Image (tube, rainbow, N blue to C red):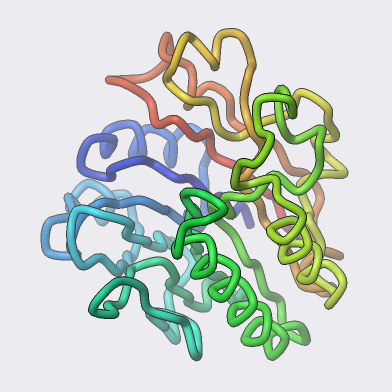
Length: 262
Protein backbone atom coordinates (compact mmCIF):
# COMPACT_ATOMS: atom_id res chain seq x y z
CA UNK A 1 0.00 0.00 0.00
CA UNK A 2 1.24 3.47 -0.87
CA UNK A 3 0.34 6.44 1.37
CA UNK A 4 1.26 10.07 0.87
CA UNK A 5 0.87 13.47 2.50
CA UNK A 6 0.74 16.80 0.70
CA UNK A 7 0.03 20.38 1.67
CA UNK A 8 -1.55 21.43 -1.63
CA UNK A 9 -2.04 25.14 -0.77
CA UNK A 10 -5.64 25.16 -2.12
CA UNK A 11 -7.22 22.01 -3.51
CA UNK A 12 -9.43 23.99 -5.88
CA UNK A 13 -6.41 25.70 -7.40
CA UNK A 14 -4.37 22.50 -7.65
CA UNK A 15 -7.01 19.87 -8.38
CA UNK A 16 -5.56 18.94 -11.80
CA UNK A 17 -2.13 18.49 -10.24
CA UNK A 18 -3.60 16.30 -7.49
CA UNK A 19 -5.48 14.11 -9.96
CA UNK A 20 -2.39 13.71 -12.15
CA UNK A 21 -0.22 12.97 -9.11
CA UNK A 22 -2.55 10.21 -7.89
CA UNK A 23 -2.45 8.52 -11.29
CA UNK A 24 1.27 9.02 -11.84
CA UNK A 25 2.34 7.73 -8.43
CA UNK A 26 -0.52 5.23 -7.94
CA UNK A 27 -1.16 6.45 -4.40
CA UNK A 28 -3.69 4.45 -2.37
CA UNK A 29 -4.24 6.98 0.42
CA UNK A 30 -3.48 10.70 0.21
CA UNK A 31 -3.64 13.01 3.21
CA UNK A 32 -4.12 16.63 2.16
CA UNK A 33 -3.59 19.84 4.10
CA UNK A 34 -4.60 23.41 3.30
CA UNK A 35 -7.60 22.56 1.15
CA UNK A 36 -8.73 26.18 1.80
CA UNK A 37 -12.42 25.44 1.29
CA UNK A 38 -15.57 24.08 2.86
CA UNK A 39 -16.44 20.50 2.00
CA UNK A 40 -19.24 21.62 -0.34
CA UNK A 41 -16.78 23.76 -2.32
CA UNK A 42 -14.29 20.99 -3.10
CA UNK A 43 -14.03 19.67 -6.69
CA UNK A 44 -14.45 15.97 -5.98
CA UNK A 45 -15.95 14.47 -9.13
CA UNK A 46 -12.60 13.79 -10.80
CA UNK A 47 -11.19 12.23 -7.64
CA UNK A 48 -14.24 10.03 -7.22
CA UNK A 49 -14.07 8.96 -10.86
CA UNK A 50 -10.52 7.77 -10.16
CA UNK A 51 -11.92 5.49 -7.45
CA UNK A 52 -11.20 7.57 -4.33
CA UNK A 53 -13.51 8.05 -1.39
CA UNK A 54 -13.10 11.46 0.23
CA UNK A 55 -13.42 12.68 3.81
CA UNK A 56 -12.83 16.39 4.36
CA UNK A 57 -13.13 19.10 6.97
CA UNK A 58 -13.13 22.80 6.16
CA UNK A 59 -14.94 25.79 7.57
CA UNK A 60 -13.76 28.69 5.38
CA UNK A 61 -10.95 29.73 3.02
CA UNK A 62 -8.29 28.96 5.64
CA UNK A 63 -6.76 25.65 6.72
CA UNK A 64 -8.75 22.57 5.74
CA UNK A 65 -7.76 18.89 5.71
CA UNK A 66 -8.85 15.83 3.76
CA UNK A 67 -8.17 12.14 3.20
CA UNK A 68 -8.53 10.44 -0.18
CA UNK A 69 -8.59 6.64 -0.18
CA UNK A 70 -9.15 3.89 -2.71
CA UNK A 71 -8.66 1.14 -0.09
CA UNK A 72 -11.57 1.99 2.20
CA UNK A 73 -12.52 4.93 4.41
CA UNK A 74 -13.94 4.00 7.79
CA UNK A 75 -14.32 5.49 11.25
CA UNK A 76 -13.87 9.08 10.07
CA UNK A 77 -13.11 11.53 12.87
CA UNK A 78 -12.93 15.30 12.46
CA UNK A 79 -10.55 16.63 15.10
CA UNK A 80 -8.78 14.57 17.74
CA UNK A 81 -10.01 14.37 21.36
CA UNK A 82 -9.51 17.66 23.28
CA UNK A 83 -8.20 19.46 20.19
CA UNK A 84 -8.03 23.15 21.16
CA UNK A 85 -9.78 26.03 19.43
CA UNK A 86 -8.24 29.40 18.63
CA UNK A 87 -9.25 33.03 18.36
CA UNK A 88 -11.35 35.60 20.16
CA UNK A 89 -14.00 34.34 20.43
CA UNK A 90 -12.66 30.78 20.34
CA UNK A 91 -13.51 28.87 17.18
CA UNK A 92 -12.71 25.42 15.82
CA UNK A 93 -10.14 25.18 13.02
CA UNK A 94 -10.05 22.44 10.38
CA UNK A 95 -6.62 21.03 11.17
CA UNK A 96 -7.08 17.30 11.78
CA UNK A 97 -9.07 14.49 10.23
CA UNK A 98 -8.58 10.78 10.80
CA UNK A 99 -9.87 7.58 9.22
CA UNK A 100 -9.07 3.89 8.91
CA UNK A 101 -7.89 3.15 5.37
CA UNK A 102 -6.84 -0.34 4.38
CA UNK A 103 -6.37 -1.25 8.03
CA UNK A 104 -4.22 1.81 8.79
CA UNK A 105 -5.46 4.53 11.12
CA UNK A 106 -4.26 7.64 9.31
CA UNK A 107 -4.48 11.24 10.48
CA UNK A 108 -4.08 14.19 8.13
CA UNK A 109 -2.64 16.97 10.29
CA UNK A 110 -2.07 20.64 9.64
CA UNK A 111 -0.17 21.83 12.70
CA UNK A 112 -0.63 25.54 13.52
CA UNK A 113 2.12 27.76 12.14
CA UNK A 114 2.84 29.65 15.36
CA UNK A 115 3.45 32.94 13.52
CA UNK A 116 5.93 34.52 15.98
CA UNK A 117 7.38 33.32 19.27
CA UNK A 118 5.60 36.12 21.17
CA UNK A 119 2.26 35.54 19.41
CA UNK A 120 -0.74 33.76 21.02
CA UNK A 121 -0.67 31.46 17.99
CA UNK A 122 2.68 30.08 19.17
CA UNK A 123 1.17 29.14 22.54
CA UNK A 124 -1.77 27.61 20.68
CA UNK A 125 0.64 25.58 18.52
CA UNK A 126 2.39 24.08 21.53
CA UNK A 127 -0.91 23.30 23.25
CA UNK A 128 -2.27 21.75 20.05
CA UNK A 129 0.77 19.50 19.72
CA UNK A 130 0.66 18.38 23.34
CA UNK A 131 -3.02 17.49 23.14
CA UNK A 132 -2.37 15.60 19.91
CA UNK A 133 0.48 13.72 21.59
CA UNK A 134 -1.79 12.66 24.45
CA UNK A 135 -4.47 11.47 22.04
CA UNK A 136 -1.91 9.72 19.83
CA UNK A 137 -0.71 7.67 22.78
CA UNK A 138 -3.95 5.73 22.51
CA UNK A 139 -3.23 4.74 18.91
CA UNK A 140 0.32 3.43 19.37
CA UNK A 141 -0.76 -0.20 19.56
CA UNK A 142 -2.43 0.02 16.13
CA UNK A 143 -1.06 0.53 12.62
CA UNK A 144 -1.15 4.32 12.88
CA UNK A 145 0.25 7.08 10.68
CA UNK A 146 0.37 10.70 11.85
CA UNK A 147 1.03 12.55 8.62
CA UNK A 148 1.02 16.10 7.38
CA UNK A 149 2.48 19.56 7.59
CA UNK A 150 3.99 19.74 11.06
CA UNK A 151 5.36 23.28 10.65
CA UNK A 152 8.47 22.18 12.58
CA UNK A 153 11.99 21.57 11.28
CA UNK A 154 13.19 19.16 13.98
CA UNK A 155 16.90 19.26 13.14
CA UNK A 156 19.31 21.92 11.94
CA UNK A 157 19.89 19.89 8.77
CA UNK A 158 16.17 20.37 8.00
CA UNK A 159 16.77 24.10 7.39
CA UNK A 160 18.68 25.55 4.45
CA UNK A 161 20.33 28.21 6.62
CA UNK A 162 19.82 28.29 10.38
CA UNK A 163 21.28 31.79 10.60
CA UNK A 164 18.16 33.08 8.85
CA UNK A 165 15.87 31.54 11.46
CA UNK A 166 17.17 33.05 14.68
CA UNK A 167 14.24 33.81 17.02
CA UNK A 168 11.87 32.33 14.45
CA UNK A 169 9.15 29.74 14.77
CA UNK A 170 9.55 26.22 13.34
CA UNK A 171 13.01 25.78 14.91
CA UNK A 172 12.62 26.89 18.54
CA UNK A 173 13.64 24.46 21.28
CA UNK A 174 10.04 24.19 22.53
CA UNK A 175 8.69 23.27 19.10
CA UNK A 176 11.45 20.76 18.51
CA UNK A 177 10.86 19.26 21.95
CA UNK A 178 7.16 18.93 21.14
CA UNK A 179 8.03 16.99 17.97
CA UNK A 180 10.60 14.86 19.80
CA UNK A 181 7.97 13.95 22.40
CA UNK A 182 6.11 11.90 19.77
CA UNK A 183 9.31 9.99 19.00
CA UNK A 184 10.01 9.47 22.69
CA UNK A 185 6.53 7.97 23.05
CA UNK A 186 7.27 5.42 20.31
CA UNK A 187 6.37 7.01 17.00
CA UNK A 188 9.01 6.92 14.25
CA UNK A 189 9.86 9.40 11.51
CA UNK A 190 9.61 6.68 8.86
CA UNK A 191 10.85 8.83 5.98
CA UNK A 192 14.20 9.93 7.32
CA UNK A 193 16.07 6.60 7.00
CA UNK A 194 15.13 6.51 3.30
CA UNK A 195 15.74 10.23 2.66
CA UNK A 196 18.61 11.24 4.94
CA UNK A 197 19.75 14.87 4.97
CA UNK A 198 21.18 17.35 4.74
CA UNK A 199 19.59 19.23 1.83
CA UNK A 200 16.39 17.15 1.85
CA UNK A 201 13.38 19.44 2.12
CA UNK A 202 9.61 19.36 1.62
CA UNK A 203 8.82 23.09 1.52
CA UNK A 204 10.32 25.94 -0.51
CA UNK A 205 8.97 29.49 -0.38
CA UNK A 206 8.02 31.01 -3.73
CA UNK A 207 10.38 33.89 -2.91
CA UNK A 208 13.52 34.34 -5.04
CA UNK A 209 13.54 30.90 -6.68
CA UNK A 210 13.96 29.08 -3.40
CA UNK A 211 13.10 25.73 -5.02
CA UNK A 212 15.52 26.15 -7.91
CA UNK A 213 18.30 26.94 -5.40
CA UNK A 214 17.11 24.21 -2.97
CA UNK A 215 16.74 26.63 -0.08
CA UNK A 216 13.95 24.90 1.76
CA UNK A 217 12.67 23.41 4.98
CA UNK A 218 11.81 19.85 5.93
CA UNK A 219 8.50 20.25 7.74
CA UNK A 220 6.22 17.53 6.28
CA UNK A 221 6.45 14.14 7.95
CA UNK A 222 4.96 10.68 8.30
CA UNK A 223 5.24 9.42 11.88
CA UNK A 224 4.41 5.74 12.24
CA UNK A 225 3.51 3.56 15.17
CA UNK A 226 5.92 0.65 15.79
CA UNK A 227 3.79 -1.88 13.89
CA UNK A 228 3.33 0.44 10.93
CA UNK A 229 7.03 1.32 10.89
CA UNK A 230 7.90 -2.36 10.53
CA UNK A 231 5.90 -2.39 7.29
CA UNK A 232 7.73 0.52 5.61
CA UNK A 233 9.79 -0.51 2.58
CA UNK A 234 10.55 2.85 0.97
CA UNK A 235 9.89 6.59 1.28
CA UNK A 236 10.72 9.64 -0.81
CA UNK A 237 9.86 13.26 -1.54
CA UNK A 238 8.25 13.81 -4.95
CA UNK A 239 10.19 16.87 -6.10
CA UNK A 240 8.43 16.97 -9.48
CA UNK A 241 5.28 18.24 -7.79
CA UNK A 242 7.12 21.32 -6.50
CA UNK A 243 8.96 22.01 -9.74
CA UNK A 244 7.40 24.96 -11.65
CA UNK A 245 8.58 23.38 -14.89
CA UNK A 246 6.53 20.23 -14.28
CA UNK A 247 2.79 19.66 -14.26
CA UNK A 248 -0.16 21.93 -14.99
CA UNK A 249 -0.32 25.36 -13.38
CA UNK A 250 1.62 26.82 -10.49
CA UNK A 251 2.78 24.18 -7.97
CA UNK A 252 2.13 24.16 -4.25
CA UNK A 253 5.00 25.44 -2.13
CA UNK A 254 5.17 21.94 -0.58
CA UNK A 255 6.13 18.62 -2.18
CA UNK A 256 4.38 15.32 -1.38
CA UNK A 257 6.01 12.79 0.94
CA UNK A 258 5.33 9.21 -0.19
CA UNK A 259 5.70 6.04 1.89
CA UNK A 260 5.34 2.43 0.72
CA UNK A 261 4.05 -0.27 3.06
CA UNK A 262 3.98 -4.05 2.72
